[in-house]
Length: 61
Image 1: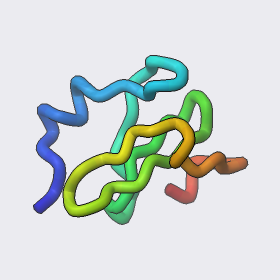
Image 2: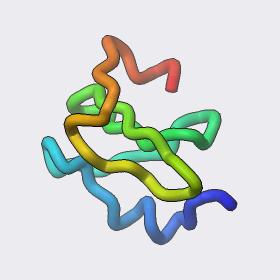
Image 3: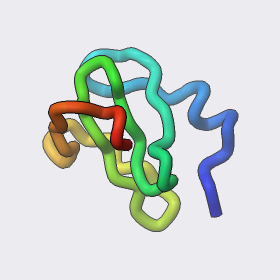
Image 4: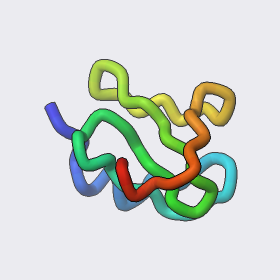
């Protein structure tokens, strides 16, 4: 099951508090502002800064 658009609209990055988006493959939440990628496990976004993946460029996500 994909995340509902209503949920994405209210989610914010826990580090910088800006809006986030779903990755192109639907398996992660992406913060373009601080370049963090949060994994989605069992349809639940894991929005923990310590578990996020820091990336150089979010365009591929």
